[in-house]
Length: 617
Image (cartoon, rainbow, N blue to C red; front, side, top):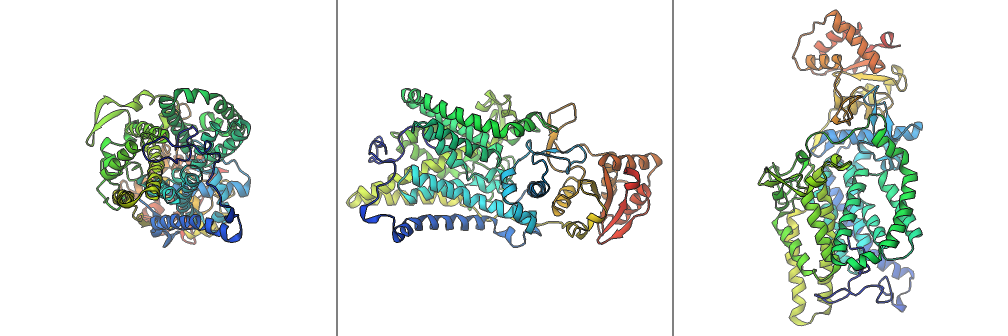
């Protein structure tokens, strides 16, 4: 992120205010007359971009490498349930496209009440784009491709915007993009959160916000910004909200240091934002209604905000998946292995402080310092921490924690803003080093090399290691082969046994969401009369009974009341069949119970099947 003023490309020597591109009479680096865009020149200009793209792609495959060994047979990262749900989201998006169904709400999970997809992770645009891949190769392959391309795309997007609009040095822009994509924030969220790592539009949106303040073309700029915002809305509404807050922090910083200049730029900015707002309102009206007032909408996030907050000490420690980290390095300093959005280590924190001091005369450096400070403090939660313990002293986020939308934020994710701002800061500092080397003489030219070596030493410990991978329990061939279609009508429910949140999700994904499932893994309301957010849904009595049998917590005897309840539950689920995989834990006990509840079952492929249509139709 950078300041919303005209100081875009720094050209001055160290310690002075940057000369603006406008003041120099141009907005891009000059093109030598002898180097007009012929084929050879275009190729020379393209080579650094291709090299950067290749490195970002190689880095992304390095992080996700273990998952590519067997996409269908393994789960990538430490949060298998999150991956399972996001695979289901991609599978449902492909189903919705091919069957022209509602992309924002469905009853195919958590039958019959359904799931509000807008109040979960959304991802309608990636799901649409990846639909052919999902239909051809399955949701697990599509997910792995998505999570890999997110890292590469985010890194390259930052490199592109930085190199075209902020710093002349491609090397400095590359370093900034590398930090934005491969610092602990996005790598840790690659443990199951593709909607968080899909930040490839973020740099372009930030730049278009800056353009509003400096171009004087509010209609054109507002329309372009509106198109980008609408696209991000359907990629990840959560990232869009954090991006809006980051831009607001940027404006606050600019107002602090350039109040008169900021006031002069209010009119074009508001004009452009009005155009943007009209476009976004037109495109997002129905999804926003679904999010805040539609069926199965929720209010707030389950649990206390501080349950998902970072500790102050997390900023100087190393993440689980960093070179200098370990399985225990982040233990108790963050909510879990996914929410490790800080964890820069002491060297990077010191490097950031030095960069802020060094760039203190540049407006961009000062504004970035404000953004970094505010976002980092917000990520700590509503109270300050001491070590790994939380005190009773209010922290800055307490001022806004109960406001609408803020009450649904996962607090640690404010550090995503911190990471992006640090990446831009390091690009600015790197560009100044490059200019020092170009203009220096004698021993003075050694100073930038020494500074670059120190910076590299500080950044190396936070480089990522490959994410872990673990085997997954495959869905039955009965599901993945499509044999279920002979026993379950489209839109009707197939009940997996035991009735388990993730079993429902995995079976549904394997069947490309051709049938409905009970329960699931999602965020929803407590009840029809209480919209307070909670995880999942309260299981039906028969689901609890079958779970208890599978765990060996009860015997196989059932009474008439339980039989009546079991048949009422399959009517509630609108089920056509109940399926028990051959070889499931306590298979014989579960089969005996199901025979008592629904009559004798029969084996079909690798499941035992009970046709419950006589009870539900």
